[in-house]
Image (cartoon, rainbow, N blue to C red; front, side, top):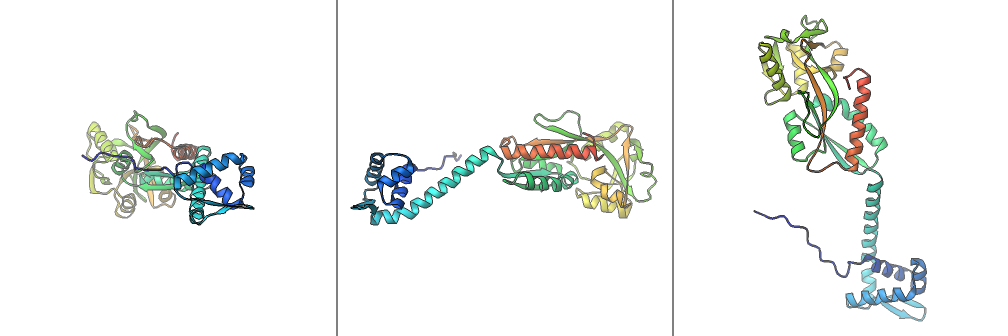
Length: 318
């Protein structure tokens, strides 16, 4: 079995960047005295640093002149490369300091299409405006895919549906969502606004195929109610579920926010499932392999607030 090992760096001459900072200052100012004033140190200290560098390099870096010092041939060859190294080191230091003060980096969000589409637009606008150092990446997939991405640390934050009252350890409940029976326009079953769970018996459904959280919960509820759920087609695609419900007279089970626009436009009807209510929890989970960075924590905070605002608008219950 291959054993992981750290990247090997062997730094000797370049180990002390402060000495090279002195080298650049002396080379630019042409004088140990002026460089000492600029660096707020003393001339004898700079002289010792230069002597140490020349011993380590095995070459003279400066030529002494009557007016001060000037770069030797070896010093001239090294000067632009050393200056570039110091500039990149300074940029890295600034980035590190900025990361400690404000969130920076890429945050990957994994979600189901039925809720990811609702949240992603507002989340992107807020991140772009309020977290300029953060890049947002959004992945959408089935519940199984999102779970896999979370386990493999491909996503930093996962938004999932849970169908049991007790959430897995480490997950946070964002909202409680009622499930609705979705049918075509003018449908009698969904026309009353509410429908008992037992009324789902024998309806022609388009439902996700197992394994799927919704399908598992529906099948368990059907067994308990002693009814038969009869999917005539299985499909994980949310657009296809809505399309076939509208055009072919099939039924599906979705949260209201997933069909909000279609219901408003009169293309679909939605009746809340009652007796008993069929509910799901919108849960937020973090990658355990990575641990939340400042950027992840900041994005999660915006998610919580956005979900709360949507609850006030009637999209779901907080």
